[in-house]
Length: 178
Image (cartoon, rainbow, N blue to C red; front, side):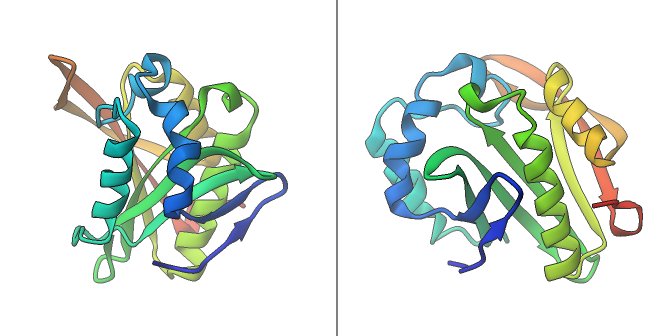
């Protein structure tokens, strides 16, 4: 587990700890509005959420940075940096903001902070992310931060019995304006 803490104007982005599970679970439990655009299905029991957290430590996928997003002491979301490729100097990320905290600028603030972390602290040159083609809100957040839509991924995944298309976005360090 990393010990990095990122402070922004309004938020603290810090490593997710097991004690965060009861704080995040109410936001994701069978919450269609929030989870419809996530590539995973929400857990229906808190025990499942603990199991997901416990499996983080066993995950060799190259996602060492899993952060909780806090406004004051209030848990409002998660962000993870994964698929770090030191040779290509790139990483991928994903995030979510709890429904009650959406459309207040927090997503933009988080993306800017994570981009700065990836480019300055990890010394990478490219940050990528995917967004469901139907998720207009996240597309606006990506574009506001400076990400460029680079392609459409047809049938990227199956969610709730439906094939989902995604847009792939990227941001290059040389184009990032914090």
